[in-house]
Structures are given as C-alpha cells and as structure tokens.
Amino acid sequence: MASNQPSLNTAKFTTSSTDLEQQSKLELDTEEFDYSKRSQWLRAAVLGANDGLVSTASLMMGVGAVKQDVKAMILTGFAGLVAGACSMAIGEFVAVYSQLDIEVAQMKRDKKQHRGDIGGQRSEEEESESLPNPVQAAAASALAFSVGALVPLLAASFIKEYKVRVGMVVGAVSLALLVFGWLGALLGKVPAFKSVVRVLVGGLLAMAITFGLTKLIGSSGL
Image (cartoon, rainbow, N blue to C red; front, side, top):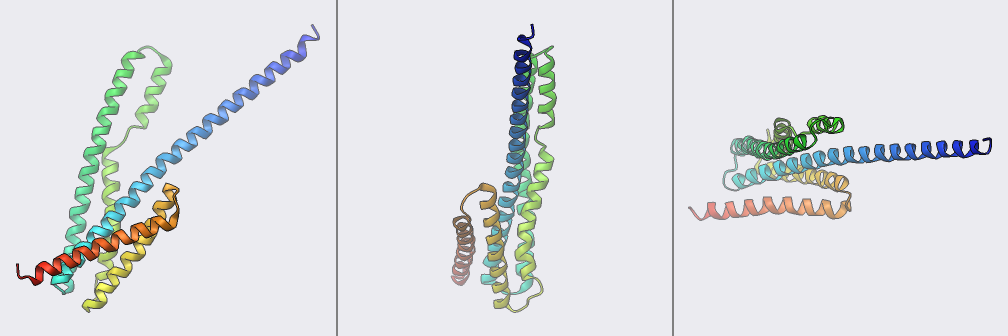
C-alpha cells in the first residue's frame, strides 16, 4: 500500500500540471483573439481616416485648381466630409447588418442542434455577446473618416493667400499620410518604410491627378 502512494501523488501532480498548461494555453489564445479583434478595428479606423484625408484633400485641390478663393475650398472640403462620412457610415451599417443576420441565423441553427445541452447554452450566450453592432460600426467609420477629412480643412482655414494655402494643405496632408502609413504598418506588422512610402505616394498622386485633370478641364472652357 505504501509503494502505491508516490505513484498516486505523481499522477495528481501530472494532472494538475496538465490542467495548468491547458488553462494557460486557453488564456493565451483568448488574449491573442482579443488583440486580433482590437487590431482589426484599429486598422479599419486608420484606413477610414486615410480615406477621409485623401478624398477631401483631393476635392479641395481640384476645386482650388479652378477657383482660388478660400471660401470655395472650405465649402468643398466640408461637403466632402459630410458626404463621405455619410457614405462610409451607411456602407458599414449595411455590411455589418448583413454579417449580423448571417451570424444570428447560424446561432439559431446551432441552438436547434444543441437543444437541452448546457454547454451549448453557454456557448450561445458567449456568441451573443460577441455579435457585431451595426450602429457602433457605422458611427466608428463615420468618425474615422471625419477625423481624416478635418486635416486639410483645418490646414486651409483662414489662409487667404492661394499659394500658401495650397502649400499648407499639401504639407499637412503629407504629414498625416506619414502617420497613417506608420500606424497601418504597426498594426499590420509589416515593414514601416515601404508602407509609409506607399501611402504617401498614393495620397500625393490622388491630389496631383485631381488637381491636374480639373485644371485641364477648367482651362478648356467646358
């Protein structure tokens, strides 16, 4: 009987170690999942802000190519901010609501399969808590777009001299593009230099193309 006691203690110790390892692994998986969800939301916010920045700045540069007064540029930028934020919010709301409908339908099918199962009920409660919120997603998308669109608007405000105003818009937008490119690289875990250059060149190209084409059409007398 005495010889069996160490083996029992060893078995208990092994079982406890295994439980601790499984618990630690589960906690790590949960933390990684939470971080992944947060990084996806942050990355979407950065992309939304970048859209607002580039589209609004390009609109302002396009109008500034044919109409040099500050009021025209500011009104154009404000209209771009409102229209873009509404468009982003509606698009995000529709997309997330479609995803919500799919997940709710899947939960109902799972509920029928696991009816009376306690584990299934717990899983259903956890899934209900993690369902996407269309209103929250729409508001976040509109807010991110608006934050980006405010950069060229604030840069152009109260500057009457045309060339100085255009230079301020290009400078402020370039700085914001560098920041957004760096944040995107950080969240995506990719080399920062390539991401920053890609975002900066893309934004400057969008502004230059809009400015050039609008100037061309405006000078043609159409």
